[in-house]
Amino acid sequence: MTFIVYNKNFDAGNPWYKLEIIDEGGAFYLLTYLVGMVGDSYHLTFEEAKKEALLVYGVNECDWIEVPDNSSVPTDVAQLQKLVVSLSQANAEMAAKFCRMASELQQIRCHFEEFFSTSFEKD
Image (tube, rainbow, N blue to C red; front, side, top):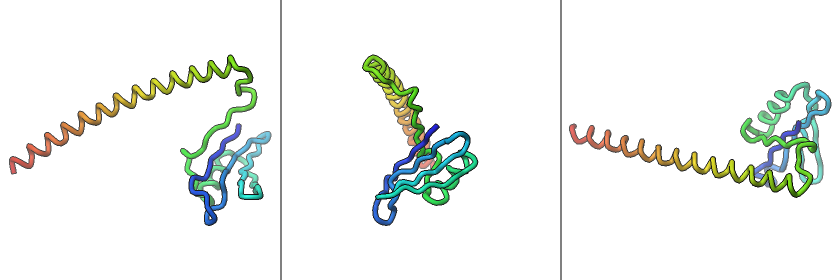
């Protein structure tokens, strides 16, 4: 299991550009990639490594991206095509959900505006 996060605010005042947590047989290492060097720190649990990343670098739980093991990475064109189709279908489903939610929010906004406009007219 490996998790990574990239620094969106990389500059001279914030010099790390990538953090990585790797599992090495039950020991967890938080790797800090700086320009020209890599630092690491040892942790007994994955949660401890994430906590240090939060305390030292301000990395939140939602910032981490899980990187699949090499065994699950597609190795031939047919597998890659299948993965692309699968991701495209998932993307279309998410787009449809987003459109439904946007429509529902618009309806709520209209009801909200109607309610408050009639409420203020009575006063």
